[in-house]
Length: 116
Image (cartoon, rainbow, N blue to C red; front, side, top):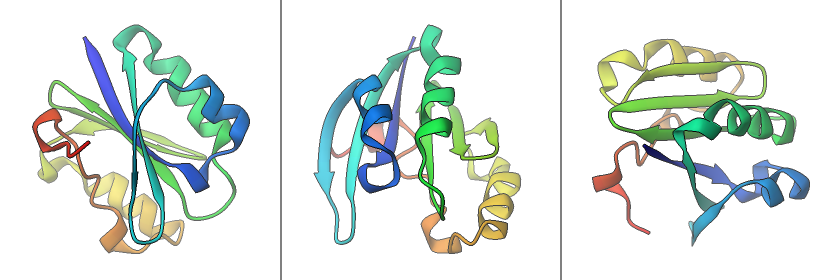
């Protein structure tokens, strides 16, 4: 099974970016969004790469596939579902770290919602 993810290019150091399989790039108003892909077997390794590579500050990345959602903060990882009703712990944690609620939307979180 393959997973995809979104990492803000400006949130993660170059060394960590080199270790990720970047499948696409999209410039938003403020950030460059990197779409990554990985096999299920590399999930734990990828979580660790992202956690260690995230710059200090108000950043996170998220991975998704087959109804699963993995939200990776620098200090904590949440394994939840793409169903918004399961997001509360990850959203609350993100707010505690200073991330605005509007940025904790975890989009896309399903393959069919991808735009690049």
